[in-house]
Image (cartoon, rainbow, N blue to C red; front, side, top):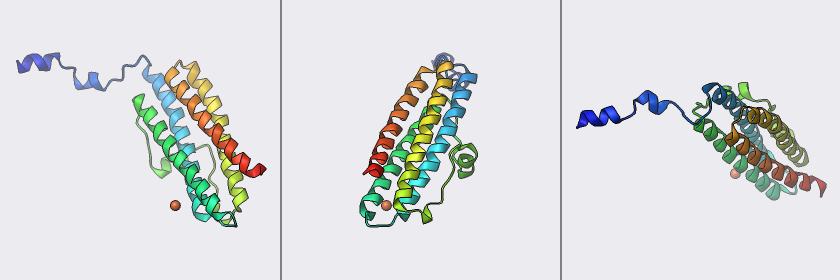
Length: 172
Ligand SMILES: [Fe+2]
């Protein structure tokens, strides 16, 4: 009986092989895009944390809370991106050195910026990510990975909403 079950059971190799209708080469290419995007989002997460800690001025309470909203958003999308890569069977390198190697967005020293410059830098980060997602999603779309294309569209919309909110602070 036990023999019968083990014969019927899939081998570990079979179970480990991702079988979702996307070639391994496609999944690797999409995975690399997601890993770069994850690194960019991580740079912006750290930027938002730094601004939350270092902001000063008469609007301290509101700005401190604004940057908390920002890092919470990045915290969520970082997780979503990494888990999207895992759904494609791609492992996610997550050392700080991995992030700084893969990131396309530059780090900023937030210790000496005015609150307004911080909001501008945050806005700039979102807009940079939006422009990059547009390019990335065209590549992913050409690879016929509809799931990731859809995921990237939703992600871009979240960044567009944040960019609008930050711009509204500056226009006031
Ligand atoms: Fe805090």
